[in-house]
Length: 268
Image 1 (tube, rainbow, N blue to C red):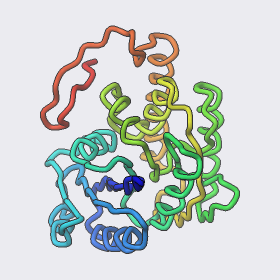
Image 2: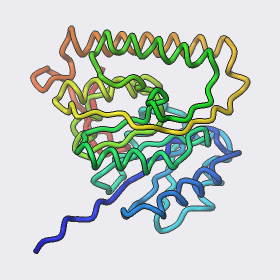
Image 3: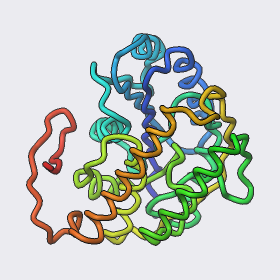
Image 4: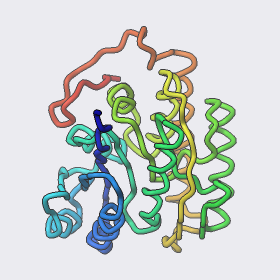
């Protein structure tokens, strides 16, 4: 009798200017992974060596923890692609560094992933049993963006932007080379394109979130600028997806091999 193959998890942790928390982040995530029934690896991707994040992460690297990075900040989208190119797992987890998200959510998402035989599971602030401590302003922005995403893309999930997600490896291998967004709208581009290519088994799972960036809870030029950038990128994704059909298999894309990412990518 053949036993089912044990699942191997690759956990990718993009990090940018997290020198204060990165060692605790890694230790906390590892403590959760050690309790799972799966084998795993952790890949910390330092998105720009502008402080001591890389050096401090390297101090806790080990057999299950690999720390990689590059000098110039290139955005979360690039960091995730950089990580997946080096990941060995058949299941890929993305979790943001910074300690806002409790890593116990990884276990919850993986249980949902197994139960629903999902293509993708996303952590959601709006799941009925999520525990969320989040500023009112950001709740309003998140809810508004969720409505916009539902109208534009027809996705059934209410929270596309949270930094905790689980994917089948084959989904990422099919979708990531097509993507263009380098920064924060990478989440919606990834989910919308996956859905477009037939990976429609996308579900939400509960998380625990304690927002720590008190200074950014009020309106600021940085926050307004970030919201505007995400809005523009989201509209651009809609245009490419629905009007140009840019992401479809039949579209005429120009590809080049990116040695850093270790796979072909689109050229604008």
